[in-house]
Image 1 (cartoon, rainbow, N blue to C red):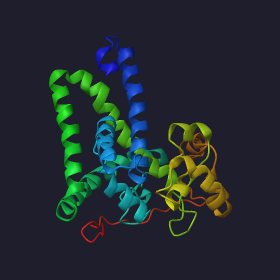
Image 2 (image 1 turned 180 degrees about the vertical axis):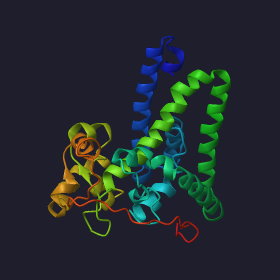
Image 3 (image 1 turned 120 degrees about the horizontal axis):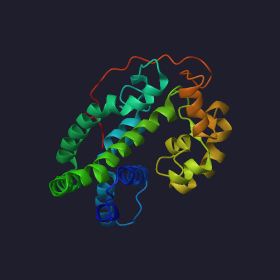
Amino acid sequence: ILSWIYFPESWYGKLFVVAINCFWAFVMSVIVHNTIHSPIFKKREHNKFFQFILSWSYGHSVSAFVPGHNYSHHKYTQTERDRANSHNMHYKINALNQFMLFFHIAPLFMRDEKVFAAKMLREKPKWAYQYYAEMALVIGGKLILLILDWQKTLLIFIIPHLYAVWGIVGTNYWQHDGTDEEHKYNHSRTFKGWFLNFITCNNGYHGAHHDKPTLHWSKLPEYHKEHVEPYLHPNLNRYSLFTYIIEAYVYPAKRLDYLGNPVVPKKMGKIDWIDGLDV
């Protein structure tokens, strides 16, 4: 609201508005992620209302997170049914694999979202009504704002919202590429740095999150220390995301697994998986 009211005239002011809104939109995407795993309120009606607020802040339906994340990614991590599977990426420049992940899988996410919503409309219509209402709010609101002022809407809402969904999807590459999806603990990479976990609500503790998805984010460090860290390979028990990015994308910039071997991406099909899903 403040960005809209006090919209700057200078190019550097507009750049600042885009940057700060991109940051907050990404923070909203993290809150969305946590909310679909562990709802904030005890009453369902309160959570449904909160999802409208989050949907507008994030830029897409909160309910839409469920098929692509809760079911596809968590249930089938790093397999053909996981749309965010890092094996889908085959660029020789490793940084491009993380950067382009969202653009590769976005069409599949949108298709799955449509199929899942239709399935839920038949089987659990209340969920579908919530999803369609959230989508109506987000799309309808943006259309109205585009008519009022397309430039403000583009810089304040559309670009930050695209950044948020690109960012939250792209983190899958850091967290899972070069790990062992068949191992009980070595399927995820953990980052324990305090700043990262401060701005992402402890989502650096990704292995603990996969092991206990419904656990509140504030309890992930303790759970990691007691139930994951003793069994996790040291190379997956990282402290700094920054140093990992330097190693993986700058120098030596090699795509290696956690044992130091070159990653050979597995051939992944584009199979349909939702129709037979038990929800």
